Length: 383
Figure 1 (cartoon, rainbow, N blue to C red):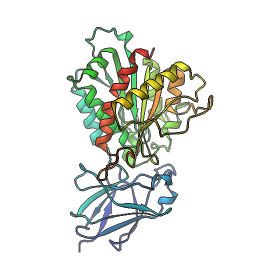
Figure 2 (figure 1 turned 90 degrees about the vertical axis):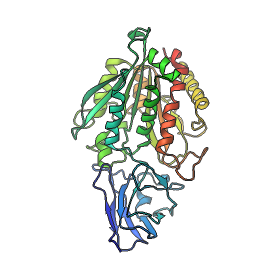
Figure 3 (figure 1 turned 60 degrees about the horizontal axis):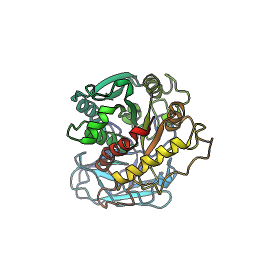
Figure 4 (figure 1 turned 60 degrees about the vertical axis):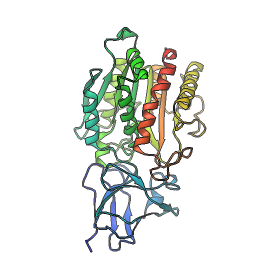
C-alpha cells in the first residue's frame, strides 16, 4: 500500500495532521490564521489512498471560530481542482467527520471551493481584454502583493462622466470566504458581455469600481478572516493604517477620491444556509430614503434570482448602534448611499438545495451575474 501523505504547500493550503496511521481514522486539526486565533478554513491534499475507505476526523471543529457552521455542513473535495463535490459529513458537537473512498491517489479537500491567486490574476487578465476596463494599481499589501482595482465604464456613452453613478463592489475582506470572488467573477463576466442589455445600459450610466480580492495575503496564507498582520479588515474601516490594514486604507482613499453612490461588499456566512444582505439601519445617518432604496434593491433581486431571499438573515441593528468600523456601515454613513453586505452560504441554499454540490463557486457566479438587475432597478433613485 502506498504510504499516506497530506500536504498543504500550495496557495491557501492549511491543516494540521495529528495522525495518518490508519486510513479509517485520519486525525486532523484546523489551523488558526497566521497571526490570529480565528480557525475555520482548511485546504489540503491527500495522497496514497486510492480505493481505501477513508475517514477523516477534524478533532477541534467544536472549538473553531464558528462551531455553528458545522451542523448540516459538508466538506468539499476534488481530484482535478476544477470540479468540486460534497462529501457525507457529521458533527457531534466537538469532532467533525467526513468519509470518502478515493478513486485516485491524489484528492483535495477544502472548507469551500478555493479561489486561487492564479485564478485571481487570470480574472484580472480577462477583464483587461475589454476596452471598457482600466486596471489600476492602488498599492501593495504587507506581503508585497498588488492591490488591484478595476475601473469599468463605457467612455463613449452619451452620459457625461461627472453624471455617471459610482458603483463599488469589493470582495474577500475575509479571505476564506472564497464564494465572494466567485461572485465577482460572475458579475464581471456579465458586465463585460457586450450582448447583455443590462450591461450595456449600466456601463453607459455608471462607473464601476471593483476590487476582486481585498485580502490577497490572507488568501494565500490560508487564513479564514484576517490579513498577514492578523487584522480583520472588516473591522478596520474606522481608522485603517499602512502598518496594520493597508488594504482598507488604499481602497478607502480611492473611494474618497471618486465618491460612492452604491456599495456592495461580498462575503460568506458559516452558519446560515441562505443568500441575504445586511444594511445600514443602525447608522446615525440612516434615513427613510435609504430604507426605501434598500427595500427596492432587495425586491428587485428577489425577482432576478430565486437563490436570493429576504426572510432569513442577521438581526437588524437598533437605531444608532451600527458598528462604523464595518465597511458597509462606514461607506453608508460617509457617502449617504445605499450600502449592503452580501452574504452567501458555506453550506447550501436551503431554499434550493443541491445534494451533490451544495452552494458552489458556479452558483456564486450566477448570483453575481444576477445582481446587475437590482443595480439597474434602483439606479435612477440613488441620488
